[in-house]
Amino acid sequence: MNRLHSPRKQLAISYLAAAASCAHVFEANLPSFGPWFKPGIANTFTVVALFQLGIKAAAQVTFIRILVSSLILGTIFSPTFALSVSGSLGAIFVLLILSPWIANYIFLFRTNLEENNSNYIKVGPVSVSLLASLAHITLQLITAEWIIFGHKGIMLLLPWLLLSSWITGIVNGFVSYQILSRNIYNSSFHGAAK
Amino acid sequence: MKTILQFLNIISKSTTSLDKLVLVVTLFYILIYIFLQTSTTQGNYTEIYLDNKLLKTLQLTYNQKTEILGHLGVVVVEIDSMRARIVEYKSPKMIGTRTNWISGSGAIAACIPCGVMVKIVNDSFSYSNNSEYDGIAQ
Image 1 (cartoon, one colour):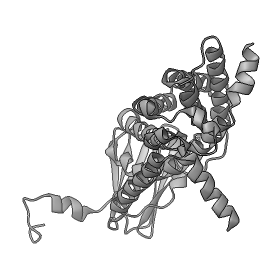
Image 2 (cartoon, helix red, strand yellow):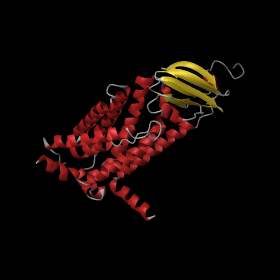
Image 3 (cartoon, chains in turn orange, cyan):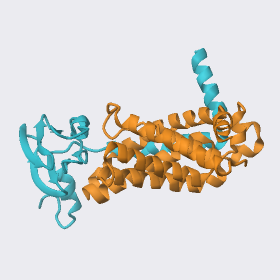
Image 4 (cartoon, one colour):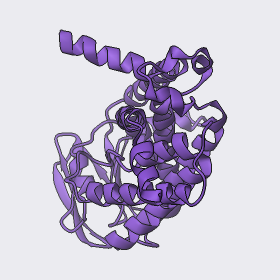
């Protein structure tokens, strides 16, 4: 798989981290769509980083995003910050497990992911985003139970939150696919790095 | 119809076979989980917790309002027609209030910043778990 090299890679990571931070702050200021429900737009950029730059870059984008957005929102080292970190650790763990099976992003530039037979047993951005969002909400709720509440009753919310994560995970996965298939890094990151 | 077909075509093109399998399997398990969770009975008591400590137990049969002093000020727990809800005033996102009325056994409404949680219980469950006594002795 074609990977970017430093410092071009560093530039791509910083672009994605900045975009993810903006999305996180924007999302935090949106009116609530329902109890415990967040669209998770920022995770789109983590999925893009995973497919274009690899698992290490995806982890970097995630943790830079959490740190920067917490500083901007003033929630750093608060319970909200602990929830963000724990959820992201869960998502990164899932990405780490899935990383050997991710579809080659070169094929995403084509219209059909299954054009290449090797992609039949690979996962695309949709299921990566979906599984990461399910892990994210599960870890967040376990942390809420463990650190904030200390009561197992909070886990009764888990199935409903999993359903909302299933929907948002798929939507974010399609958005990631659209970003990846537009081959953004070739047009902008390359030009900026020259 | 044409739009739906175009949408399904986009979904088909942007996912691999494994993706489709993952989508179906995860949805199936989540729906089963929700079905198991929601097939509960009507509760008849509500337990109010502050910082994970049981503060009050109230019957759902009496319509009443009780005030709890949480970390962010007063939180009102309202009971009406065999259901309960939290009414917050200073919580940043009002998640407890947005949860609205709860009535099924095991349902909860919580305000994390206030440290207040309301849980619906059915006392027949707690008795039935106590195997030392039979139904008549209870």
